[in-house]
Amino acid sequence: MRVAVISAEAVPYSKTGGLGDVAGALPKALRSVGVDAFLITPCYLQTKGEYLWHTAIDDLWVDWRGQRFRAKVFYSEANGSPTFLIDAPEYFHRDSIYGYREDYERFAFFNHAALELIRRLGAAPDVVHLNDWHCGFAAVEIAHLRFWESYWRNTRTFFSIHNLAYQGAFDAGELWKFGFSSDFERNAFAFNGHASALKAGLSASDLLSTVSNRYAFEIQTAQEGYGLDWLLRERADRLIGVTNGVDYDVWNPEKDSYLGAHYNAWNIEGKRECKRQLLEQFSLPVDLERPIFANITRLTAQKGIDLMMAVAGEILATGSYIVSLGSGEQKYEDFWQRLRDYAPNQVGVFRGYNEDLAHKIEAGADMFMMPSKFEPCGLNQMYSLRYGTIPIVRAVGGLDDTVQNFDAVSGTGNGFKFRDYSPDKFLEKIYEALFAYYDKDAWRKMQWNGMTVDNSWENAARKYVGLYRMITGK
Ligand code: ADP
Ligand code: GLC
Image (cartoon, rainbow, N blue to C red):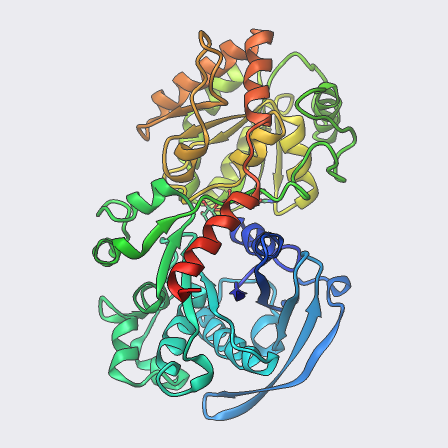
């Protein structure tokens, strides 16, 4: 089984969020269960030179917007699988990875170039595994090519939804420039009077998946369907939830190279040292008995920052610390800064993106807050579980699937979760968590339960293989 995974971001080459973690780890996981998987991703200005092992192709000619466009392709295995990075400076050498008016054109090009690259690499893949709106273009192109080029005849497309909120919308009048001119192609993109790359992927792919069972169900409802719930209901028999895994080579307190001390479920002593170092790093007074509430996120409404804003004062009133790492919307960045100014002895804030600090916070904190409005899967709660940091989450999407409420009587559960999007419900769970925190045995039991959960990629990889088999008949 030969599988090409295509993604707009992938660790360690690029990352803005969980998609990067997943796309970096998935091909390696697929290879470990016997799939001949390789990854295709752009080479950005942000991609470190040390990861570009050598030039694979110097002259990838791509017919693009009526011209012949020459791109370069680098090769690497820095993520543990063969990876091809498409280098087209005009499109990808920019100050940030996303956020440009013509993002749709940048990724339309990336998709078209990726298919050209696949042809150059030899045997056609059995499956092309596409991720999020950035890859919707390739789903349509392959569906079209299957009728015209024998090379693609037996290739099937698999589309994973990581976040339905990002749709890649643009003016449908642009489609012809990218070579999409047939009725079939235009219909695939058509959505509410414009073109949507996400809708194209959802309608043209042979099989759809999303990153948790719960989210697969939620996106078929009007509240969470972002206008596409009808299509997802129509294709419900082709939509399957596969919960993301954790790359325990990268996120593992036993050997995490970012940490000053190591620990595991059996011997958790090192976590105290990580906590001490974290407090020092934020120049906070070192009182190891007081709990640290943490948050690491893109600062967008999705992540429930409003709820954290509403309860921060109450958390501080209990004498606890709060530590936050994130960047995003101005009003949220301002809030964390104000909170830090208000209680400089209790609050640590880092505005920006910082991989090193993300690991140190996971290890040094006691509780991780993730009260998301919606959460397709969520990785930080799973990292928290492994690091003995108790997640307090809203029961939506993957958070609901991966966190179980702690029950002090039976000693079961690995965290705390609430259902209604309300500060009061969130606060209730925060107080419950605090109560458990001061009961050392209960806390240790809960940490044990979380740290011994197996969220490794192997389960997910096996499920994907089963689904690839289903569409290819192999
Ligand atoms: P999403 O993909 O919606 O952002 P996830 O929980 O799936 O949410 O994944 C977020 C990933 O991005 C995690 O690996 C998290 O550690 C990382 N991350 C988010 N914000 C930052 C930041 N400011 N600095 C470092 N890592 C971050
Ligand atoms: C998206 C989602 C997040 C998920 C990640 C990886 O960014 O917001 O919940 O974990 O993709 O699938």
